[in-house]
Each structure stands twice: as C-alpha cells, then as structure tokens.
Amino acid sequence: MLDDFRIGHGIDVHRFAKERIKEKPLRLAGITLSENYSLVAHSDGDVILHAICDAILGACAEGDIGEYFSDTDQEYSGIDSTILLSKVLEVANAKKLKISNIDITLLAQVPKISPYRNEMIENLCGLLDLNSNYVNLKATTTERLGYIGREEGIACHCVVLMSSNG
Ligand code: CDP
Ligand code: ZN
Image (cartoon, rainbow, N blue to C red; front, side):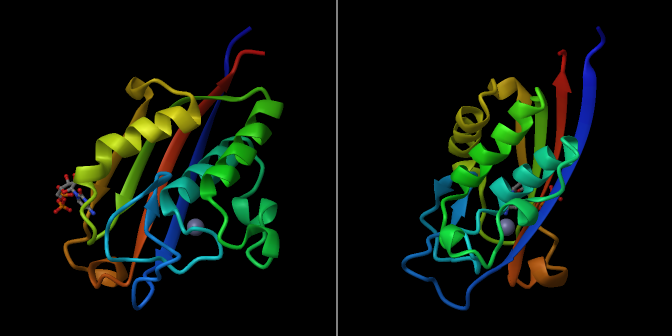
C-alpha cells in the first residue's frame, strides 16, 4: 500500500515581557536560554514547540493546540511545552502518523539563536525521535521591520511532512 502523506503548517507568536521575569526564563525548542528576555504566555511560551505542535496537528487534521490545551485552564499555567508536544505526538501516534521531516523558521530580531542552534536541534531530535538529517531549524531577523524588528515579540513557522504506511 502506498504511503499516506500529510503536510502540516504551524505558526506561533509571543510578545516579550517588558522586563525579564525570573520565573519565566526564555525557553526555545525545549531548552532554556541564558538571555535577558521573557515571553508573555500562559505556558512557558516556547514558540518553537508551539509552532511544531500546530504543524503536527495540522497534518493530522486535528485543529490546533488551543483546542487541546486551553490558555485559561490552570492545569496548563506555566507548563513545560515539551509536555504539550508529547501529548500532540500521542494524537499523531493514535492516527499512525509519523514525522518524515520537519523544517522550522524562527523569526526574531533578538536574541541571536546561532549559539544555541546545535543544542536545540539535538533536543528536538530527542523529543521528536528523529535523526538530525530530518530536522532543520533556521532563523531570520526581519531587518528591523514590524513588531519583530522592533523587538516586541518573536514568531515561529513550522512545516512538517508526516506519513503513515498502515
Ligand atoms: O537575510 P538573512 O536571514 O540571511 O539575514 P539575517 O536575518 O540578518 O540573519 C542572518 C543569520 O543570523 C541567519 O542566517 C541566521 O542563521 C542567524 N540568526 C540567528 O541566529 N538568530 C536570529 N534571531 C536571527 C538570525
Ligand atoms: Zn505559543
């Protein structure tokens, strides 16, 4: 039987807090960055993991993370987004869908993520159970244009290909 291929796309945006919040260090791709920023969010604000979750749910035709994890639910207050991702992977698993490859683009004027990129990819490979040949993480500034360029917030886009041979 031919593989059943599904493409999914996810976007997430978070605003920077006016000042760094001690209890909310910047978390991206499941790692904590030693940077002087915090993101405003009900969860830990990990835009990369949230965009990945939405891309996976998109490929599974399962809506978005807001439908699974309400941002008014106390249970998810400050939650580590790796927990959200593992629940989304369970949804995909129940549909027998596996990630073939994933491509992620962070849009951020600040901080520069190149010093963290390898660690982030390694962490994503572990979380997604993928070889690094199938995981791409890149970043771009917006050349100081718009809300990202004004350092008001950051965004992440993600595209994922999933397949099932069952
Ligand atoms: O036009 P291009 O995206 O190449 O230029 P840029 O936005 O100035 O980004 C230059 C390089 O910096 C990119 O290739 C990214 O790898 C890196 N970068 C980063 O590490 N962290 C960011 N927040 C933005 C860009
Ligand atoms: Zn988010």
